[in-house]
Length: 391
Ligand SMILES: Nc1ncnc2c1ncn2[C@@H]1O[C@H](COP(=O)(O)OP(=O)(O)OP(=O)(O)O)[C@@H](O)[C@H]1O
Ligand SMILES: [Mg+2]
Picture 1 (cartoon, protein in one colour):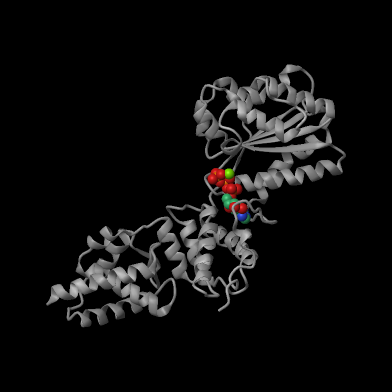
Picture 2 (cartoon, rainbow, N blue to C red):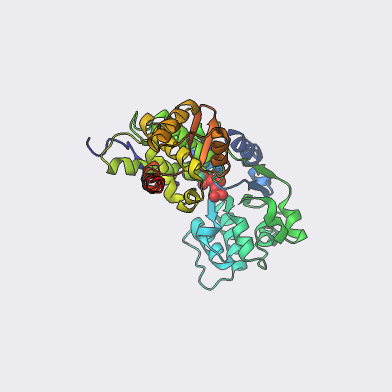
């Protein structure tokens, strides 16, 4: 098969690409608009509003606020307001107050020379420039918890929320600041004054549920892959891995799995991404079954696992039914000249507790995030050893 038959546009899986639609984040975007749209309408009398965004890794905090920034800028333009939405990421744009503020100024204009300025002076010039040019600004500070954690004595929130106090009583050209963090724990590092000016406006970004993960990934698959290159089954597997522990709904991992699995399939000259590709990639990211785990199994555990590998391989799918597994187990016992155990269910349950076997339902058994190809090989050599021991 010709190469290039997998991806339509692999960039659509990049963590930096923001899709047109952000499913399940409409409510969060709506809340942001409900806060800031009204201020645009009455911008001359606006006082800054601070909003906090809280949610675990990969729940769309960054992409949603960037999208909101595009929308509010467009809205302001329609209303005849010169709005500058600025996004700074504390992990990218500066780990110290000095560097962070310098980058903030640079994102506004190259006209301010920051060379000999202190961080406080940079902020003052920032505000002065906005006023002089009749520009209003909303600034997002992403990964603020990271910044506060590494600079606990900087009291950056104090600086950022009191930018207007240089000219008391006057409305501020900074009409909003949005602070993004993974949880509210960063408040522990703030002093009471900072906490109180920050206020109580918190927008939560809950973890995506399994169904939500699947839908989000499904629309990315449509954008990135040729039709049919990723089967429902492959997508199911990627979604399951992404939605469940230890990944817990981090969409970034799902996108990575799709990207690397697609590459792997392409390198093998295939035009379809198979569940096996996903397992292989995932096992490399996060090997959940070590060879030690397998060595620690008893004979029946190994035999059942081997039976599962065979069932999966012959069905070519991500999950097989219990009946199928049992049949294969009996065949293998016959091959080894062993009597099948009467406590099959117990042994299977043990494999599930150990996190080696993944049971979605009685008819859907699979292997937890491991490459089928490697496992098969490993078990074949194990089987070889077993065979020798039997003699
Ligand atoms: N609702 C969604 N629809 C489509 N893609 C999404 C959605 N939510 C997240 N993503 C994608 O998942 C990836 C991670 O999202 P994002 O960077 O916004 O997460 P985050 O909450 O900021 O995570 P972190 O706390 O690690 O910074 C991005 O590539 C983004 O495009
Ligand atoms: Mg982020």
